[in-house]
Image (cartoon, rainbow, N blue to C red; front, side, top):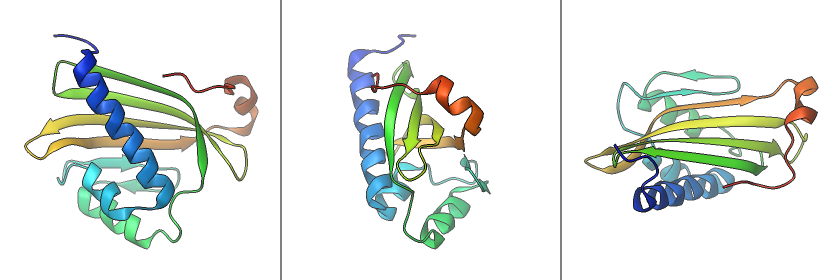
Length: 138
């Protein structure tokens, strides 16, 4: 198995960047399109636990205004072979300055790369200062 094959890494990096753009513009169709349409898909968020593509899609439609604006501080993507990858993002909320984390498991399906599992959380305020990073690392 090849870890971080340059071609696969470039593919997934472009998808993670496109997901971030869709998140910040509240492009619900693009966000839904990034997720695996399966009952096995999971997204654990700051205030919600969503246990299928249908629950994730319903959450996005009902979320007024979309995700709060944020700045990515660090992005780490690792690919394993040609069909599996993880993406981890450290971000800072623009409105509160709170640090947050996002992790995604990407799989290659018949319909292309999709997120099969995702997690989003905010750091406790006491930990925020220790983890702040002045620049994004790729």
